[in-house]
Amino acid sequence: DAKTLEFIAIAVDASCTHMYAPGTRRHIAKALDLGATPEEIIAVLQAVAVLGIHSVALGAPMLVEEMNKRGIAMPASEGE
Image 1: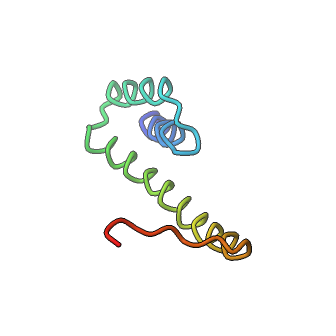
Image 2: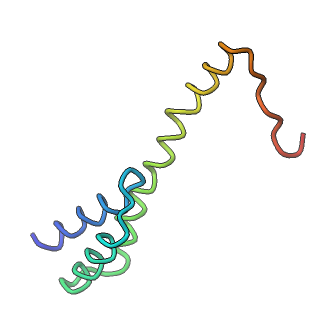
């Protein structure tokens, strides 16, 4: 249905791999016009937010591996 298509468009445009603000705004407005609730739209945004977490989970171990190959020490974390 049309509302579901708008949810998909919001997810694509708001994703950390795309981050297209004009499209996100346009599709949020259209979804609201089609009867979507703010809670439904927040749920879509929450679902795509975990993509950023997965990017770090994928890339951080690779960074550590490459640092180890080059003998680069891990930076001290705050509080150490």
